[in-house]
Image 1 (tube, rainbow, N blue to C red):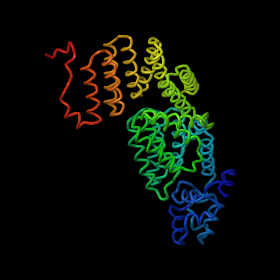
Image 2: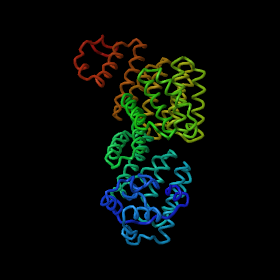
Image 3: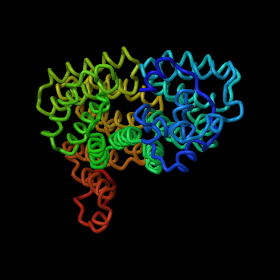
Image 4: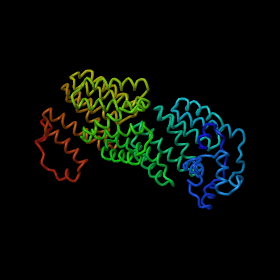
Length: 457
């Protein structure tokens, strides 16, 4: 196909008048497939029509032939680019190739060097998009956000909604890594905008669905996560991205475990672990290792669980996966608590919680306080346990994460029940019910006797 040959030879693109290709196609009554003619893809023609891609001269000549127009009719003033523009096109094309090869460190080096030059707005936006995307992949979300924001503003001004969607998606990804609650709304907005495009870019839609499901998973909204993951499998029945498929299976395994369906949880997690492509996605690999460990802990196999968690921790340390590292440490703390090694559990949970707070990953910090609450309760430190659970509840209330809040109320209720504080346990369960079933909670008036020492007559 022409596009394959052109990509290999990196033929320079030429500027065409905005809307010219689409106008010519519409006036001749041709479809995208008619113009593509089997020599390039329909998507390639669409990208040219929307201004996201510039055709090489052989492709433009083919379009001209199909639509019965001279090549000169399509060219923008100065459409045959000067040497500087051609050089810049080649450098941006290099970024495309490096990103496709997942060489994100090199993408950063090339993009930062390019940004030292005086660039036109469009070139700058494309370079910043690539740089922001690479920084997200390198787990440096704070540095990625300003580049993606600048790129998005330019693409919005150009009315290039395809690239606006891309910028929104990667911005939401950066926010997700920072555990920013705003990631949910932005990811939903990106999906809506994607579905308004004509034609809808299926691969992009599938990626957005997968990422939105991951956000719901992070927020503990399991039914919504499962629904979206299943949509991904339905929409991408012929999915060629094995890495994404592995992540979808891992996400389904995680969600089904938390929904209590251990049979499906084990099945999907094992299927995810079987993908060779998972070995290249270190973050996804760490999540699968943790999920397998949690399932093994549920079955009482602490030895095998610890091996998976040790693998995950080594992976995180070698690949600078700080957010994943903290979660692995919390699972190790729970494992060592179950084994009766409270001191080690406390050290691991404290380290994870402290690091999460320093990095403003407040959801993980809240989870850490809840784990510390269980550890202190097991050691007989009732006041310390109360303080940790209160910190966890305040954190999740501030983040507006109702599912995590309910989980924490239930965990605290169990600790209070084991302590013999039935009234306190009831209060926590009532608080959880007020979140999940507010109408029913309001009608509930019967309460156990007040806690001893509460000062109530």
